[in-house]
Image (tube, rainbow over all chains, first blue to last red):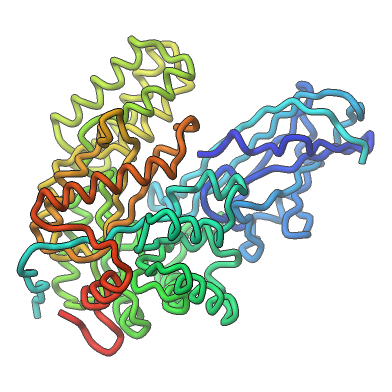
Length: 131
Length: 375
């Protein structure tokens, strides 16, 4: 729907071992944490290990397993969330960043047991900043 | 007891309005905040009707505190708009491992109906995932809060679809004036939107592929809307197959979603089977051509049908071309589409209501109130 806006330009940060980027909701309405089913963070073709990924929104940090039952915190359409993972990259250099998101759309029910999910991807090039 | 709404005598005069959904990219892109969009809507004359999606525009929705509701209502009064419909959602799939049960769904929707009342919206737009039993259970709650529930008839459904007729029949049985439909013009589209063809062209689709996409959609238009979900699924799959055969599998899902879910191929007069229950309208459209007309939505025929059937509710212009059209301003496009609506209403021997006081009085008389039904 709005995949071109997933990655916030100019928000790539790294402390040398962990790397983070701000991401935007590619959908028109707020979704609860329970509908944020997964993400990938790839820089220059290297993907951060899934178990190292963390998701920060509304000032709280979550692992993706924690988000499964999270119906209290919502991702508002104009807010940035922070996606971070174990990924050593060079600060002060240009990098190609790719973020993939899997989101459940909770009001679109496609069978007696199944809710629609969407997979969206965005790639942008930007300079990293030392965290 | 079977209750059919009274036939409305005389010509209708729809209230002009807009849904802020039309400006999704501007809001999402932080060009305008909610207050800015409301002020612009009033200043540019896109009202007086104002529709908002709860989960898009109100942080923390459906929890709305008194101070925020007061600020919102004061703002709407100050700029001179009238709140029409609050679009709400039945998030039946909010839990990853199961769907909401009936009691949970009623509780979830009740919170949003209360939010609509608190914010001053006389209508809550609900969606197809709410079944007849749930609509019946929600009717007394809607009545208690003075909010009409208008279930949206949206492609890939259409007015004479079995699921919609089942709802209509239940409405007849229940007999509550607080149950009705939102008519979405996307169910009765007459062509594949040219602006979307242009967007695919800009993504490198060949002219041959684009010709085949249009031909396939036109074939389904000739056949009419899908009889059931199985036929809908077959059509969706055929768009994916077409993209794959032409070496552009990356476009397949997009063809399918838009070709079946946005451009519904029912005829305009299909709406007549539910016309007395149409309480609200989404004037869905996708673009305006060089002649100032909507090339793929029969806006003039749809406005004529509403006028001739005595419709006096609001039409929220709902521009959906923003998904793919990043080269034209949604604000200019809304202005042009509303000019078509006004022209069509005049051609039908009536007019669109654009005056604030008249719109407020007419909407108040059109919809039931908590104290008792209006008609």
